[in-house]
Amino acid sequence: MKRIAVFTSGGDAPGMNAAIRAVVRTCIYHGIKAYGIRRGYEGMIEGDIIKMDSLSVSNILQRGGTILNSARSERFRTKKGRKLAYQNLKKHKIDGIVAIGGDGTFTGANVFTKEYPAISFVGLPGTIDNDLLGTDFTIGYDTALNTAMNAIDNIKDTANAHNRLFFVEVMGRDAGFIALRSGIACGAEAVLIPEEKTSIAALVRTLKKNYERKKASNIVVVAEGDDAGGAYQIAEKVKKKFSKFDIRVTILGHLQRGGTPTSMERVLASRLGMEGVKALLAGKKGVMVGQIHNDIVYTPFGESIKHNSKLNPLLLELVEVLS
Image (tube, rainbow, N blue to C red):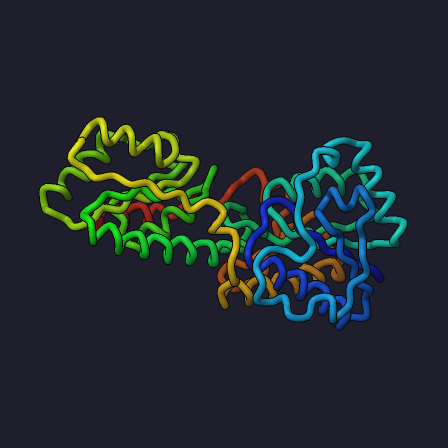
């Protein structure tokens, strides 16, 4: 293997730049030419492929986002689009690819490698949702979690000052990892997540009990994909059941995707970036490189996509017991 390319795809996540840096510098260390593909699969189709050296990734370790940019590509879903991508990769004599992204990224890589097995793909888990099987933590999750926690702490200060009930919506369309852990870390009264059916009646009972105890503030953390609706909808339902609450809603949104990666994030992304290159050199293909209990593991794309990571039920118990 003489030439390896790296790209980022799907939603950006803090730590992606650290992973890019690790891939490029590991390639250089092993005497391999490194390339970057801008804008993910869309850039692959358009031939937006650049040669990278050590200076290309200098001073990016601490930056959020991705220097290679990211984009979703409808064209890559078609055979014609994938054929164009393959032709551009062959034009640059690319032997292997390190794909940094989530479910959609690995789905595309899985299809592509079946059609064009001559080019080896390995994936690095880059998503703030932490919902991929085959790794304890994904690149971006720790930073997003800390961003959410800090924001909720700030909201709690004003909630205490005015004796208010705040519904705080965090990212998590299909997974409640950010909501659950940030809720526990901030002492939330309730955490509403897609994995568990939400009972508005039970929520109101909990909040009423706190009201009767004259609790100064109440925080409810809501994952955006909760079955009862987003934070605004749930707040309206609660207001109808108990009008005494002074309710406010805060949507954290894309705030969680940006910012400086935490130290844990940088180390994880750096290690996975290095291991991604080593996996390609060892002949691995069609796998996601993850870290479980500090060990590097390889999970086939099909498994990491189909079998999403499960929530720890002990965390759900923590919310109930400690609220």
